[in-house]
Amino acid sequence: MLQIKTDVVIVGAGLAGIYTALNIDSTKRIDIVVKESLVIANSNLAQGGIAGELDFIQENIDLHIEDTLKAGSYLNNKEAVSVLVTEASENIKKLIAYNIDFDRDKNGDILLTKEGGHSTRRILHSGGDATGKDIMNALIIECFERKNIHIHENMMALELLYKDFACFGVSCLDKSNKSIQFIAKNTILATGGIGNIYGSTTNSDIATSDGIGMAHRAGVKLENLEFVQFHPTAFHSEITKSRIKFLISEAVRGEGAYLLNSEGERFMSKYSPLLELAPRDKVSQAIYREMYDTWTDHVYLDTTHLDEKFLKKRFPTIYNRLKLDNITMGKNLIPVSPVQHFNIGGIKVDLNGLTNMKNLYANGECASNGVHGANRLASNSLLECIVFGNRIATDINRKTSENIEFKNNIEQYKTYQYNYKPIKRKLGTIMDEYVGIVRTEVGLLFAKKQAVDIEKNLIKYPNNSKPYYEALNMVQTANIIINSSLNRKESIGCHYRIN
Ligand code: SIN
Image (cartoon, rainbow, N blue to C red):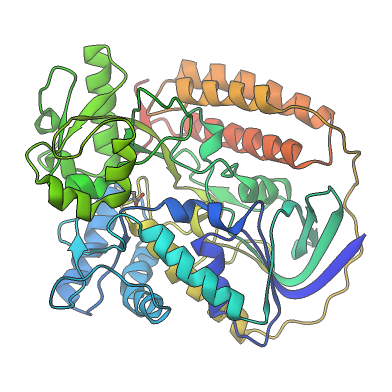
């Protein structure tokens, strides 16, 4: 079997992985393992922007901290929130130095927008609504220029390599199903979201919870997986019935759009004094209630009181996508509904991104450092990737790692062709129905029974293939989400229990 020895192996090439790589000393060899191609990470889809105070004005820093805590129902780790907000400026300035052109006004000042739960305008954006794509494009170019960074596309990470609870890298499969081991002094999981566990999601279709699955099988601590965030306004297209839903950024409401129910009534005043700019958990729960009461599967985003020219310039990606469905922003109502969007809990890490396994770090959506509490504040996720990515890099840069030898102790299974799609589809239906925005004990127990059966069957017939490991990662994470949801009896943040 091929073994590659390296200083750092990073699994995942979204912002959490790439930004961390760029901040690690260029004297260290870094290998980035990417499941498919570089350009389809979730980070590319981020529209709204990146929240952060560029100037150190104590009052604004305090407000960002308070908004983050309030959105998270104060279940956040306060120290982590303080790190997130106070270290935003130095890291956003690094992004600017990597040639990311945040949108500016005529005088060259950075334009700032607002989203749900933010008390001030503090969100930077790029290309109007193409923030994630613009950031990723610039950082990937930078990565290609670094001789110490080696990118391996179409490489599926399967299992962590570890001994005596110290991590030594990951075992992988390349696209022709050949086994490769990356033997690393430091391993970073940055595998992104869990979206495809659900029937509908805003995530890209590679988001199958691979990092959480691998960490779970190695006995690494996880936390807070009951907190699954549903974005209130995914586009409810009548033409394209894809399970991957196009996002209508919360920034559209930040620029003044309203929510209307199917009877044309603006309803948010019934649920929050912050109206359409209440935190995301409250807005999704309100929409769910309105859909239930009016027997429909969507509500509307109303931009008809806003100027079409402004909307077209401010939200070019959204404007052009809606045009494909013959919807014109500023003229027509936009059908929307809440779908799975973000995983708040994950692999438990400290303030340097370190897990409870020696030499194993995690960053971004698969990690849980406690910044989001019970519900994430909009546009804090890209910020989390860079602030904690920088901290992981600093931790790795300052430590002296001993050379390692590692002998393969991973069981090799046979590879055979099997179609796991029906299993994945079944799991999605269960999760949407019983582990969604509103949860009940009976529903969760029903979901548990079915998801446990799926997991048992998968484990009985192990298979050395990418589809098998994706299905395994998905169902194992689903079972952890269901158990955590059963254990948390009260409603808080995005975990809403009616009994
Ligand atoms: C959005 O633009 O609404 C999504 C941004 C986020 O998830 O924070």
